[in-house]
Image (cartoon, rainbow, N blue to C red; front, side, top):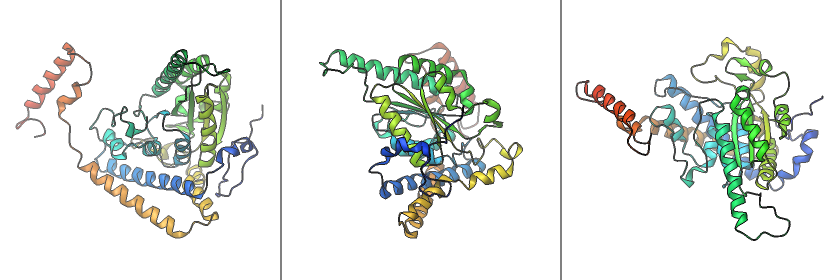
Length: 383
């Protein structure tokens, strides 16, 4: 079997040069022009500036851990911009651009890695754009997402049962969709594959997004799979494509189409976004021990920010815009950094407050132990 070329609109130099496989999705870009592209560019630059500050903070001991997203901003921005407000998004743990676009204050993302919160943000708050919590347990979010999408489907059917339908309607369209992000390493987890079984069986309104950044920590994707990852989804009976993950136009076009299919009752989709993790897997990782330097340099030349900048320049955007964007991103990243450093430390007892809805003897035992431990320090907690 010969695989088609990944769907792409911008080539590696940022020229508008659609691949043959992109033709079927070109209409999804109708009405998207320079102003939208400028917004996407700001999203990427501001996320990267924030990402860089958080990496520095971790190295200074101010964050317990940090998960960089450098190099993966293109597919994240395109897919996040393709989603509608009513859609729900389940991230893994490096979808910082998606969090930003959906309305989650980035300082709340950093608070999670500073160890000041169990989750970071209130998923029930409309301001946070139906963006669920980061999930560090590999693959768990795929089952959360499929369960949620099944709920969307069943809710829609229940509503349809109480409403007179127009002729021809079957009541399965939800008007909502779920999108779930994970990496190439997670495709080897049982959770991800089990999720596709249920998604295909029940035809959930769902889009799986695999950011294939080539490395599952220190294991290359070539060792995990002898075939392109998108083919796995085909085996489950799920529509699936492979895109150039450093091209935000491709991510937007395919994401928009697949999400619309999901909302209209046509079942799940699967997008393999070919990208690259420029930095470390996390700040506890040293990629120089397992990656060739030449490989890194090659992918740095395919930077999604540089590609979109080149495209914007071809559309007549001048230096002033790029200078202003860089200045704003730097200023905002520093503001967030200062806010991170002044975040209040939660009361130790608060970690027990929301474990169970009612009192529980094991929790009370742990609470008492911690209180005794804190009291053992002169001056109490924090002394």
